[in-house]
Image (tube, rainbow, N blue to C red; front, side, top):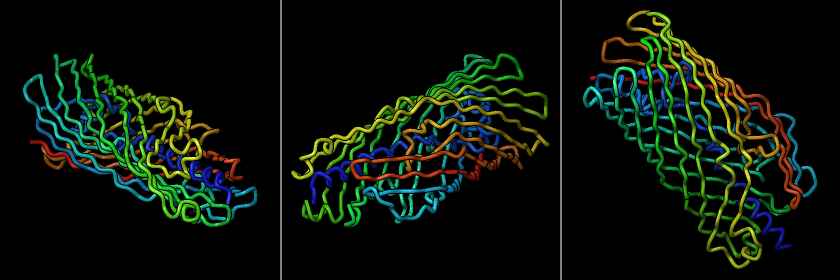
Length: 428
């Protein structure tokens, strides 16, 4: 058995596993059910309920009572993989392409806002700003480039706001963020089976959210919110197991792993305009600096003497070449009566990936999203919000190669998703 080929396979799998963490680059929008109903248009200017802690902390100054809001969104994604082909060692690699690799997942959220006096308010939010789970079938044709990715980020945000007057308020809150990830690859081992590589790691890091809310005229509010980048230094373990590890290293290997990851900053700008007593219109745009994710580097220590012979296994860098993105949204709300409001929205969202570097772990394209929602207030201090969103991505192609192993994967992906959200807000 050629040891260099084994090392190349192992190094490749670790590198590819590391790239999947950027599937967490799928920034989650699901932090507010009322905003979900309008396609997240007006997120930084509406300040309809306690979820403004995330949308724009300056909006807490508009809430004149204590408010608690809790809810969740269930995401159901679907992928259709077409025209797939794969080679291993330069020959056809059989396998399956079911496309059912994203399990249904619930995204929870919770907020508290307490006015202190006519100027100051305090808030607390718990939400998920980033996250992704992809888990291909065991026989997936492209499993040499990645078969499982699981990334979860949970944020706790204590927040204060200050109203200078009835027209201008500001808000600020530090964020305490916990990230956990599991990244697997299943690399074919030259007809002897598969070499499995799994990376697990976690970290806690801080950032901040800040916003300003201006109401130049009675019917119109303008909001700007800045969400800072967060730099993580994950520590964990890299595990390698399989027939090659057994033959060349005497059994499964385990290394101490370190991985630096930066989730990007973003700026959200929106306008809320009350057309009349019944209709409210929303516009919004978000700029996200995905180009801050320039590369991923995995550093392993405690590597075996055999694996250490190849440069690159101790420290592996993968360039991402992601680019900054814009998303735009428009929405409207219609108040049927004092108890019921209906909402709708439409948004478009660019992908940060490109046609050259797109991988099976991040097979995403530009999105369009259509949303519907409703808010029901049966009594003055209690509101139930529900929302539904349908997401459709443009068809994209994934082309990955690893010449040293004769490993390729080529396929067309068509992605869509349904989101169902619900929340309850209690004022006291």
